[in-house]
Every structure is written in C-alpha cells, then in structure tokens.
Length: 261
Image 1: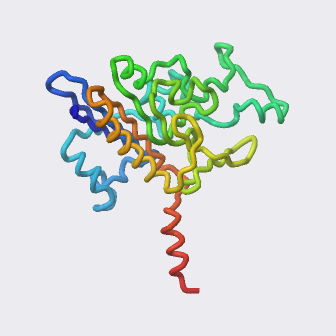
Image 2 (image 1 turned 135 degrees about the horizontal axis):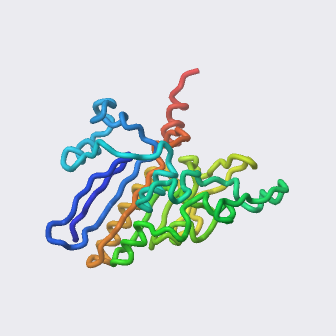
Image 3 (image 1 turned 180 degrees about the vertical axis):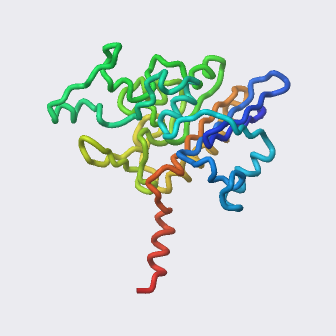
C-alpha cells in the first residue's frame, strides 16, 4: 500500500512528505474544541492521551499557530486554507437561516454587502476551493468520516458538493452522542436526526465517536482492497470533545444499575 501520512489536529498540524515524490495517502484527524493544555504532553493527566502522545513523539509537533476558538471557523480554515473571515465562515453554521421557519416567523433573510442572502454565508460557499477538491483534481479518492459543520442546508455546501467522494457522519454543530439527534437553537427549538452516509440518512446504533473511528478504519481497509493504486485522503473529523458531554449509553446504564439507593 502507498505510504501513509497521518496528520493530527488539536488544532495544530504536523507536516510530512514522501521522499520518492509519489502521492501519499493522507489521514487528517481533527479533535473538536480540544484545549491546548488537555493532552498529556501539554500538561494534561499523564495517561489521558497515550496514543496521541506516541504519535507526537514519532512525528513533528508545531507549537506556534493561529486558530479560531470555536469549531466551525476552524474546520472552514482547514478545508479552504484561508482565514475564516475571508470566507465569511467566522459566522457559525446555524439553523437560523432555514427558509421554512423564517417564513413561519414572518422574517426575511438579510443580505451581505455583496447582496447575497446571509444563509449562504452560514457555511463554506460552494465557490470556495477546498482541500478535498484540490486533492481530487490530482487523483485522490476523498473521504470524510465525522462532523461537517460547514453548511447544513444547501447541497453545494454539503461534503459531496465540496469535493468529497464519500461522506459519513453528521452535518450540524453537535449531536446526542448516542441517539444522533441535534438540538437546534433559535428561533425554533426542536431536535432532528442527523446521521448520514453519502448524504442519505442512515440508522446505526452506537456511540457516535466510535462509529466515526470505525467508519474511517472501514474506508481505509476498503480502499486498500479496491483502489490500491489510487491515493487516499481520509478526513476523520471527530465530534469529540465538543459538547454535549455524554457517556456511552451502556456505561451509564451499568452505573445506574450498580447504584444502591
């Protein structure tokens, strides 16, 4: 199998390149809203992140970087290689701009300085060139497993409209880790199911962080069997450690059963 380059962002990125000039397989792992001082090597508990610590010891760690403090702008910056304020992505992708409930409230979409409805800027615009599109243009198979949060309503802003051949996971800012529903905020308050494969809703029981990892492993194994001569870009966009903070359901149920009241 082709060489594998593994990037881990927390949010910083290690860099490597193949010596022989061939196109490497790339796996980019993103942890969500993880504090700089949370990993063991930056002051966190000694045994909290053994695998990340091992990868760091075997690779390159960058300690000076610029990143946004919240999830969506950081994701947009990685995907486009541009500061989020250049792509209007410093506005987080929210449900406020969905036409159906704006109409119920008797409201209209505001327009930005270019005259475009602002719903378009609640995500990465389809006109932006993403890393997935750039890699796809030079022969890569592109896959995302995990959280998107760079546009939730317009087809051109969803992963497969932004250069990804394969998509798995959720679109919105966060979900219930066990039942995959997303609580929407203002102006309407409701929950919707948000779990998809190739942009089709699917039901899969399990803890979302585990499912994201399992799908990434499955895609890599499948790629090795079917597309060995094609380079792979695998974007593993975890929802953890972003809220809500929830245990694996079986674990919390066991704790409840063990309690003596």
